[in-house]
Length: 296
Image 1 (tube, rainbow, N blue to C red):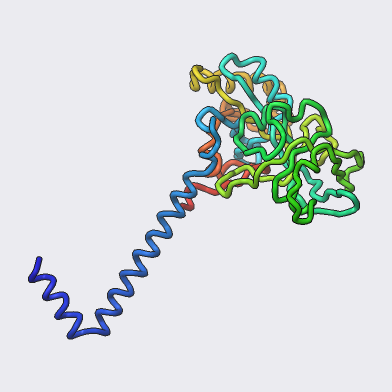
Image 2: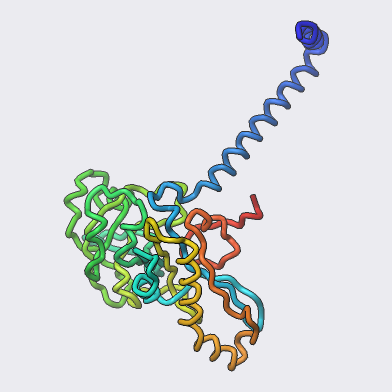
């Protein structure tokens, strides 16, 4: 060891420029490796801040149109309530989607926002931290809204009196209803490693008052949460059977109209754990941030 050290020091002394280049190159290589490592670790740790992340799943399905195969998340919003009612292993379920209406007004001031719609269980399932308001009392009534701290700061013009906003109304001027949504909660800013992003969430009970992206099977994503001691596999099997039965007549109609192939895999439901959603970029998804796992 001592001899090797002496040799290395002598080599540096005799070839200072080459040694400097070597050390610099090695440093750059190590730095790049660390950057890549931390990036990959970050990508694989999306949504892990939710307390019940290991019990939350999203509905998905693959299918075969006559013009090509597809994977998607969009289902009917009533699916959320039906799952909780029909599947014994499920304790909570919620719809979640984006809306096209991304301009809101408050006291004649206008704000560009990412608008989302969700049902009652949403904030009970997902651990978005409330600054004010109670998750268990969210969206029991239509025309209610939860906003982020960032949006609240914009509305308050830098003031921190968040309680002053509770009960105040926000309007979407481009929405034909022009109805005020009452602020009932404010959550902290969305963590950077969240696949779910929004500035404001309004009650899903307002439904079709908001435009969105739909297909032949629906226009929202649906999540469910398994009971603490229930079998996740049993829940998955029951969910997939229920979805297949729910869409059976619709699939048959589309097959008779030559829209879908008449094969056993024309429509195959499947579920994804919450922690896998961000890396499921191969699933067509209008509502959550995602990347293709193969790109990492």
